[in-house]
Amino acid sequence: MNHFSAMMHKSRHILMATVLTILFAVPSLQAAPGAAGRTGVVDFARILQQMPEAKKGRINLNATAEPFKKELQRMNQDLQKSIEAYGQARAGMSQQARELKEKDLNLKAQGMKKFEQEKFGRGGIVQKKEQELITPIRQKLLAAIQSVAQKEGFSLVLDKQAMVYGAADADLTFKVMNQLNIK
Image (cartoon, rainbow, N blue to C red; front, top):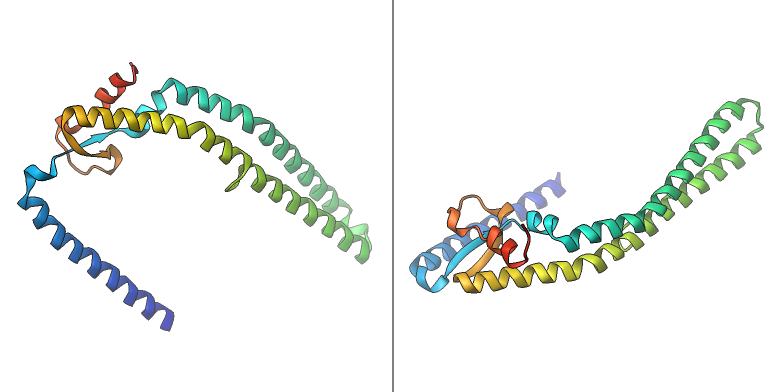
């Protein structure tokens, strides 16, 4: 119960800080609407999905990941067959043989998890390849957004997914797509 009280206390502090931030920020934004500039939005995911470089990157990433997926699938099938065989032979095995086989099965499962983590987990080969491929594409997209925003007089551009309400003229998605020659 003491942990719950501490958590509630922290939640109240966070809520109070948020409310105070909003109270102080909103009047200052309303006081100088011309100084703040215009806010625009772009559908970052849509543009990224339609960029030819991103399509090539997805193909390249899939080509990198596919052999690892197949190996992981093979390892899983092997483990399942071993578990099934152990289940059938377990009744006729001695205690020592069962323990040895269970240890072997646990080692196989751990090896499979380690392989999966090394290839697909955080900091794994596939994630590193994805970062290597996506970084230049994101930089190109961000440069196009910045260029369009500056031409159109926007001082702030947000992702459309974060927008609650916005006027149609604040959407820069198609202008950015034109800048990138995406049809």
